[in-house]
Image 1 (tube, rainbow, N blue to C red):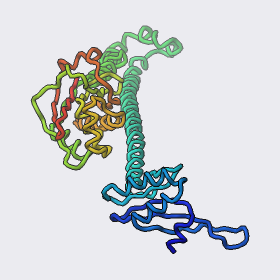
Image 2: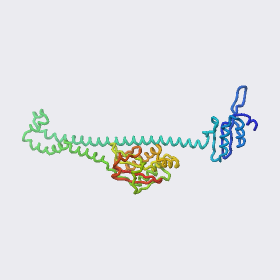
Image 3: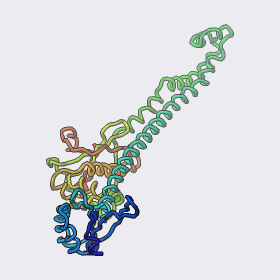
Image 4: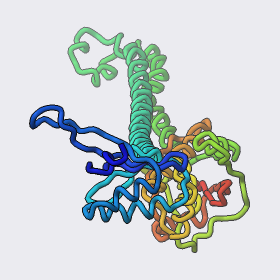
Length: 368
């Protein structure tokens, strides 16, 4: 058998399990005249594998590569395919499969989270539009009610006029009424005046003024524990945050901003993160390895995925503001690098909360 194995065939796969190496060799076996069937045989042991590969000059590259692989200390199971005279990691290798699973999982999470962000933004826009329509309907109903209430009150003043006067216009009716009917007309004068005051638009104007005053940025901040709970529930694990007195340093080279926008597309506030918070909060949400996140911070360059995921963190934090009774509904924009010249109001916000996450990053929620 040993002589048969070493007599021909083509090496296809090199497998290591628990420090034990196996070389799979495929050779064509004749089963009929001009009919061959591939048959796989295995060579076991380092010496046998290297001796087989070194027998043929065409396997020289594979022999060199196998010599190096077999000399390395065995750790986890590994598998290599022979491709163009070299050993390359096989798609069947457990390490390769795990890496592929992780990449696909990250890609799927990234796609799903971006779709969720878009869906949340669309739902928020629909809610705002619905609230605006209800508000407008209430104003129109108030104006219509004032007109309907005024109509019956105005009729008694025109009722006592003569038959000839009925042919005249409504504006001439009070002038054609007889003096005897003056008291009844005067009796209706005060209700008519009230009706005229309603028709003049005094009450509708007040009804319209209220929504306008409601749309100003009278925003109350929630308790800091709401923000902390939001971060803990969203990211999970041991990730948390706490309130701090330290203010965000705008002189830092790397600060990232998500603008808070009301239903009239006005800037109502902003959420800021420093480089470390942007990388670690977003990256941990996507389950990126810690060493990769540390490298992003060291390079002063967060990945697009980390920034996009931190945008979702900002969206969740804005939800804490929306949950406060009486606050207008706000939506957060995608994060981008801060240009303080475009947001000078951040140096003197109306109200602000400062947080430090468990990774050492800083977060600031500011209301304009």
